Every structure is written in structure tokens, then in C-alpha cells.
Image (cartoon, rainbow, N blue to C red; front, side):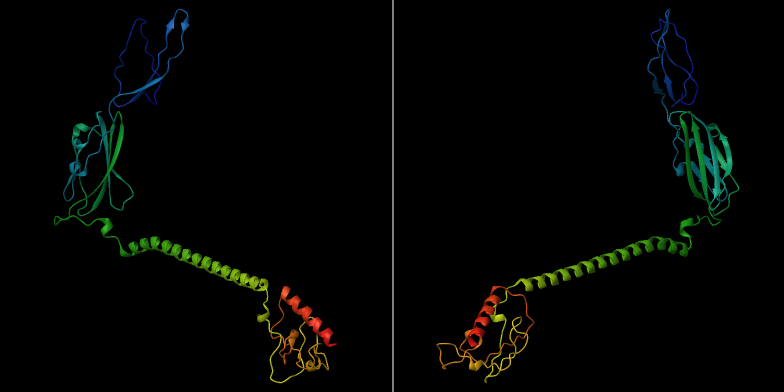
Length: 306
């Protein structure tokens, strides 16, 4: 048996079987066999475990166990199921609602008593009853809540129904405040993430636009080099970087293209139009092959005029 010392039983060698008797109900046992002969003691056999039939007591429903009136409680012991093993004894304790200590009725109530009466209870009061039943297979604890009737024959309201509203309010706060706080923190985090993502997207778009504009080749028509006037005037500025200031005394009309005679004055870059000055309305930007071609034409035209 678990928790006990080994017991030895000597058997004759010609025995084929042996019946163990006087075992406890619902109890687990261990056993092994050792053989002896003229040469001496043999090895122990494998240890096996067996359990006798039976279980711990089974607690009944409160309706079948308790009967009460204003000040008296009657406990029906026969309502307990023994689980297949005879119940050895009962232990009964009780206390009023709100008390910490249990009041012991008895710790050795035999089943033969059948009924136990608990007296001197307070009318209209809630109580707790703690009952323990023990047999060879083990013990079972069961707690029951009951109330004595008021002098008018009614039962008092349950303790949970008369609890203060403030306590209920604070219990709700203990649940609501953490939930609301978590929701607010989550919303703030999401807003910050969205704001950072939006700013990064805007910066990337701006950088992408700047890079695209700097890499686009400048078309001639997108870079006006002069302004048209009805009457001739002196050139305002030469395009950078070839001239940093105006050339004094220079007159466009005095420069005549060879072979053209005095029929027509040369305009900008050999054009037949006149009255163009090399005004640059926008800051110079990075240009490609077109700008180099323009540079060569300007240099050629200046050499001819000189």
C-alpha cells in the first residue's frame, strides 16, 4: 500500500496462486515475488501495482443534504454516496457570511447517525457549510451556501445583491481604465506612424522631382536667350559663362554677315530676325549637347563680327 512499509508473506514452493485478503477498499498496492531454492535467494521479480475497487465519497446536491428553518439546520448524512467504499466518518463546520473563522460541529461523525442538527442560527442570515466525508479510498470536501428564513418566512437577498454601488463602480473602473488607456496609446502610436510615413513619402517625392528636373535635357525652346523689341537696342548681357559683362560699343546692326551685304542684319545665332538681346531670364541650369552647339555658334558669330 502507498505510504506504508513492505509486508512479507512466505509461501510453499508448490503453491500455484495466492489470494491477498483484508485489503482496504479503493487502495493502491505494490507487490513482487522472490524465489528461494537450495542454492539461495533469487532476484526480485518486476514490481507490479494493483488497485482495489472503490473511490472517494461523492458529495450530494444541496437540495438533498440540507433542511432548515429560522434558526435550525438539519444535515442528511444518508444523501452522501460512499463511492463503493464505506464512509468512515464526517466532519462538519459552518460560519456566517463575512466571518473568517469556522465553527466546528464535530470532526468524527459516523454515518450511522444519519442526521445532524445545527442549532442557534440567526434568522435571515447567509451561512457557509463545509463538510468532509472520508473512506478508505480518500476524502471529499464540499462547501454549501445557505440562508435561514426571516420571521416573515422569506429568505434574505444574496450578499452580491446588496453590495454597495460604489464598490461595483470601482470594479468597473478597474476594467475600463486599462482598456481605454490601451486604446488611446494604440491610436496615438498609429497616428505617429502615419505622420512619419507621410513625411517620408513627401520628402522622397520632392527629391525624386528635383533629380528628374536636373537630369532632363534642356530644349532650345525652353531656354529663351533674347527678348524681341520693335526697335534695335544694344545687347543687354551675353550668356554666361562666356561674358561676365556687357561689351561696350557693340552694335548688332554694324555686324553684317559676309555675302549678305547690307540687305539684312544678323540676329541671334545667325537668324534673320533682328532686335534680339541675350537676356537670360532664369538662372543657368545644367544642359547637355544643345548648349554646346549654342556655344559654338556664338563663338563663330563673334569671330565674324570682329
